Every structure is written in C-alpha cells, then in structure tokens.
Length: 284
Image 1 (cartoon, rainbow, N blue to C red):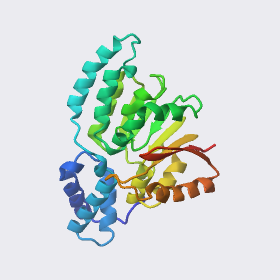
Image 2: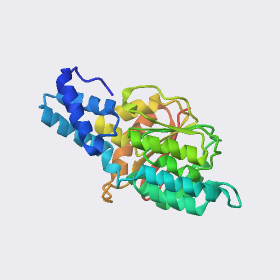
Image 3: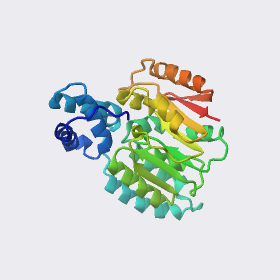
Image 4: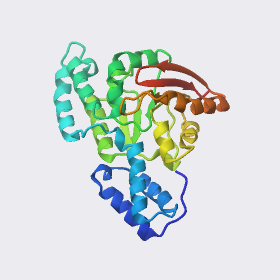
C-alpha cells in the first residue's frame, strides 16, 4: 500500500487500537489496518471519523464476505475424524470421499466467495485445469476459504500450494487443513498491498480479489497483476452483489481489467458461470 503522510504516533496508535479492539477486526492483519487508518487520518479526519472510515473500508474489502462465523477448532476436529475414515476407502484417497467433500462444502459456506462457488465445484476445476499446462505450484492471493476446494482440483498432493489472506485465525486453520489432508501447502497472513514480492508459481489465483483491493487503494489491482511471478493468472469477478443483485458488476469491473491486459500485451480466455466471470490470463 502506498505510504500515507506520517501521523503522530499517538493518534495512529489510538486509531489502530480502536480498530483491533472490535471483535470483527481483532484477527485482521494489523499492518493493513494501520495503513488504512493512517490514510484516513491524513485526510484531516478526527480520530473518531478516521476509525469509522477505516472500519468501513475493512468491512467492504474483507469482513462483508464472512457469511457466518466458522468455529475453526470444531471444524478441524471434525475434519481430523473424517480423514482417517475416508483414507480407508477403496481408493485410499480422502480427497475423493463424498462424506469428506460434504463436510468441506459446509465449511466453505461460511465465506461468501466460496459459498457462491459451491454449485460449480464439480465442473469448474475440471474445465479450468484442462486449459492449463501441468501445474507444479500454486499461489492463492486473498484466498478466503478457497484452499478448501483443493480436493476438487486435479493436483497431486505434493504440489506446493501457498495461500495468502489477512485473518490470522483463518490462516492457522488452513495450515492445519493442509496438514490433516497431507497436502504440500502453507498459508501466511499477508497484506498484499504492502508491495512485498511473491514467490514464483506456475499458477496464481486472484478470485474476486481485484475489486476488493481497488476499494482500499486505487490502482492496487494492476500493480499486483504485474508483481506476481506466475505465467498464468486465474482472475475472476463477481456477477452479482453479496445480496444477489445483478447490476452489471462483471462488465463494470472487467472493462478496466481487459484494458490493463491489452496494455500489458497479455492474452486472456474466459469461463463464465452464474456467480462469476473467470479469466485465464497468460502473461508470457
């Protein structure tokens, strides 16, 4: 995120403390909350106004997508009890077990993006990966609960899967999910607006991510597209609001995105579904 003018530490510290004290934001990346609060204070807002504005940005860009609370400890306990039973099936592969997949579907229902994707899980990844060269590493930006869909992806368990998001409790759960499933995966709490580099990967997912980043910082999406070291980007945009209203959202978002792709000289194919419009971007 572009640096905002320096604020007196006491006001900024007070703003950050007020944001992180809210139950909804106590697990969020503190650096992101601090950057947003600093930007709001730099606009001349009072402390109260800056905290309110920062919370609103964090809600619109992240918290609004949490449909319901997921008890991560309970979910992990249920997962760990299901994996051994699934591993005893005829294929000895828990990822194809119907009961385990039903459980993961329930978990994914807690996040709006993965909830909307549930009806197409059985077809999306087959259609998508048919258009890709063999994938040996994956990067998932602003992942939410998307890594829980890995059993539907035609990937070997030893393919490294690195996931980034801003909630520390969610990141801990995803790491334990990878471990329980025997996947070569890792999740990290990360603010991708901080300009830090990302490790190379064959494929990078940015599912419904760019509009959220743009709400926080204009131009952040285009910068991230160039920053990611992956020859293939899987980028998607919502076809409807969180309330289910269709308001030409995909067309609004993709017009600017396609202009950026053309300017960069990249190629893009698309897959369209009821809930989202997905692009397969070839950077090389």
